[in-house]
Amino acid sequence: MDSAGIVGFSDWYSWPEPALENAPQSPAVYVFRVKASNFGRLLGQSDIVYVGTTKKSKKGLTSRLRGHAGQKDGRHWLRRIPSEVGKMEVAWLKLETHTAARTKESELLAQYSREHIELPPGNRQQSEKGFQDMLASLPKLSHEEQRKLSLWLASLQEKSASAAT
Picture (spheres, rainbow, N blue to C red):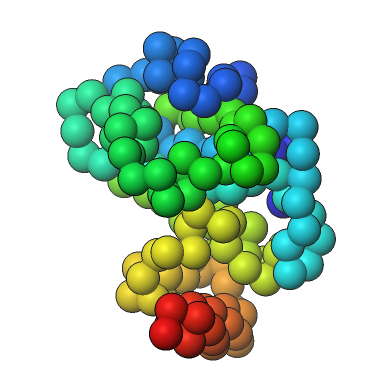
C-alpha cells in the first residue's frame, strides 16, 4: 500500500505549510507520506509514514495537525523525516463523525499491515492494546491473521525494549 492506492482523499499538501492553512475543522483521517519517494518495508515498498485520525474536538483536523506541528522535541519522528529522509506531504478524508474517522483509520492500518506485515513507521508506537482493539474492530481479518499480527507486534516491542537497554 502506498499513497497512490488511497482513494477519495484531498490533494496532497506540503507539510507543514500549506497543509495547516488548508486543513478542515471537521473529523477526518489523514495520511503523511514522503514526497516522491518509496522506502522498503518488511514486504514491498511504500511512501506512507503515518496514518492518523482526529481527536474529539470542535476544531477537528486543524487542531490535530497543529498539535503535530507544535512538537518541539527534535528527536520526534515528524521533525526528523524532512531533514533525514525527504519532504513530507499530508492528505485527508473528511468524515461526518469522529467514530467514522477512527473506523477508516483502522481499515487503512489493517490494509497496510496485510500488505507490508508491519505498520507505517510513525504508527509503530501504538500500544499493543490499541492495536488489539483495532484488530478486533475489523471483522475482515481472520482469527489467524489477528494472531499473526499480534505476535509480530509483540516481537517488535521486545526488539525495541532490547535496543533501549
